[in-house]
Picture 1 (cartoon, rainbow, N blue to C red):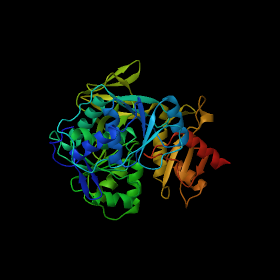
Picture 2: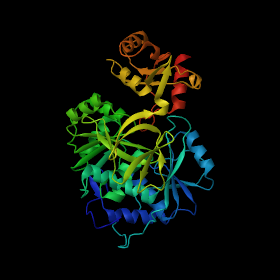
Picture 3: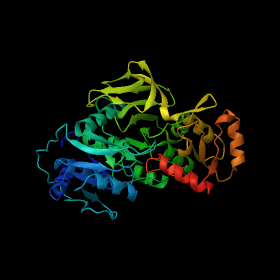
Picture 4: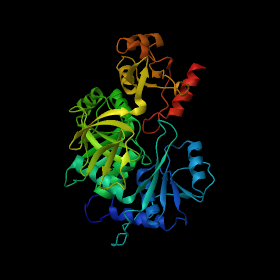
Length: 436
């Protein structure tokens, strides 16, 4: 990280900026307090403190463990897989059998030396885990060089080759791959600054946006966008809205652009490869890879190659390669539903449900009991003022009757994680509760 260019802050706390020299002071001070170990469970919720801890762990030659959720069982499993690890937290830590290091504002002064420590490009900076939306979470190693280059590619795509500084406010946690790349690494590797607070509700987002100067970039998800539009009210001016973690309907993107006065762009990526492509959702269904990346197909499987990736990565989705780094996304192979010789997409069925007036949130999925045979879909629906029969009748006007989800269970809320994804195990548990 260059302390002199760009000259702006690395983060915003309240209405004040945190200088890059102050940040390095905090990193060095924290690094001096860390125990000898190979891995650290980084649970900091304040984004600046997470960033400080992330960099300090790397400076000690250690690796950050970034859990897919803060569920006690998930974290206990990770701790058990990496004996000798310790934890970093800025709030009361969970009850886990490991040493905890408290993270706060370490120095409060711009006292860092002019010589900036160097991180090796091949240092494994983090172990990140898939969300479990299609099964058991899987672990993937991320080097410092890959994370930094991905952040630079994102910045160049959205902010131009000169990478003009922008101020980022996010609704996604830094432990998630999308949040890590678009907030923490954008600040460390591309010259942007990030708001330290964790924003989730519309009022929190308004406050956070008001605390940073223009140009402002909102990093969010389709679930959060839908909630912001439902809340209404004015938001501070935005330069750009970035969405990921789930498909964004063109209708929702258009409504967000009209209400928030900024273009909405999607990022396509996966935990295995990181962010790799973008599109302007209301303008085109076609995705464009980042420079230096290309697709290939081997034995019916799609792979992505990148100059910054250590090896080709098998994509979890099916794509149609259009050449010149352009492609259509056809969805995950697990998204395809076959019933009575007919085919449909689970994501398309979900989109139809969401178009029914009165449906607030919904998901169509294949229950565990139906896997392995002819898949029969189920659905969880948030629709306080609608009955199940009404919902099925409305859906029946849009889809083939063989794809009507049975059971369809109304619930108070979907079991979404912090980035809006729906782990398969949580869906199964909610379905069983609803049928009890």
